[in-house]
Length: 97
Image (cartoon, rainbow, N blue to C red; front, top):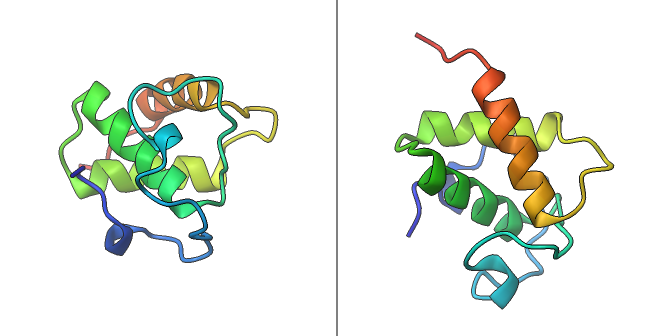
């Protein structure tokens, strides 16, 4: 189980059509299309990024959710490109004191 769960999400406009156990929501992000409005995809990406980048708090995970929800460019479409984008953007956002 990751740091961030459905009950932690800051936005409530996600769909929940993709089962959390789906094979494309496990392991390393790949060329699969990232469904930016699918709740389980958002949770997968946040939790994977937290694991890889060492974030352990819900606050840090929430920063990632805000970036994905509000700033992710439309041309960033695959899981691996979303993860790469998130790594860069997350490190550029000032952390709250």
